[in-house]
Length: 461
Image (cartoon, rainbow, N blue to C red; front, top):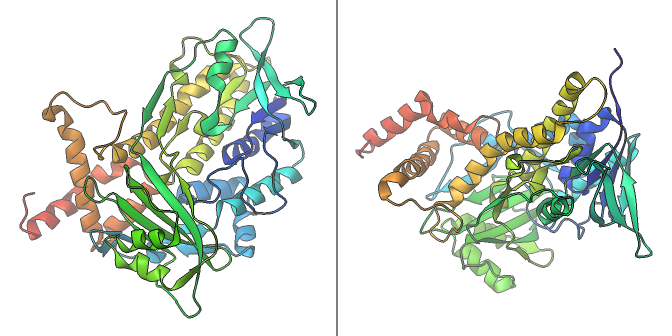
């Protein structure tokens, strides 16, 4: 039986979610057009369309593995450009309560590089890929619908002369990110806009590139401190990237914003509970300005709950679920969503052998909602520990909040145990990097280790 290939897909947005989605679904379409309102740089440079491109982008180990399956040349090309590959278990110094997590040898490899370097290579691969093209400097104004009013048939785009044109497609994918206007596009077609949930811990972070001074050789490739609610909102991280540079990030929850001047930036680093961050910066030279960002709220659109959903239209990545970037889950979650869409397209051929995409959009959004649930719970569960966090449903009595408080206390104890026990440290790294599910921390093994740790410390178990 001949495999069904649809004619044309349009992906709105050329950020990581859009590009990875185009790659994931390319075998299902004769051609794919990525429509991007920005223009791509000639090399690995920050661009306006990716406002986070000057900040730390830590691709989790699960995400790195999936990206390197989709783009087999990526690892070698990043290393050729100077990206630093290291064993996270041995090369990361993660501090909690003044102690580092135990070091261990592992196959948990991380690529230390900047976001523009990853974007540039993936953009280059897609430009070389037959059937995938980019339409740059074009703004999508809305969706086009067929005569039935419920099937999306393409997008309405701006033209260089100020006019408008319609691009037709069998499938339209919204990967335009946090700035998605899909809600208003749907209402213009007669559909309801989705409800949304926003949980905001008021995180602000500031990043700057540094060059370590000759002769300074730290015993880490990643140095970071863990914020602790409610009394220690400040944290810092130094990430080794290409070009023998460091990308330094200082962050805080609430109204305590990290400064953007030289003296204030260093003083903020000095105030951290771990002296190593400030000591390291004193052994390095700044390479440019400080960039600060406060667009960090968790935002979830509930497209899966719409009573009616248009045919031939889906949304992926931050267009649906955007989480606090402090936890580094965005690229990984977008990649997993793209792979899920490819799987749904494969199943669609069995469901609809006549070759249409009827029912795909609603089914995929429900599947994506289930996929997003874990990431959403991780991010908002951590943010919920901060008293200033808005958007939470505060319980009416302390008893109702007891399970969440117990889980947070247990997580703190796991971090304590991880300082001396490599097995627990590895478990936390694998869970944090989405290699293992969150519930693995509640299995008998780690629970017993926490119990023994408390008893040895003569503390209540």
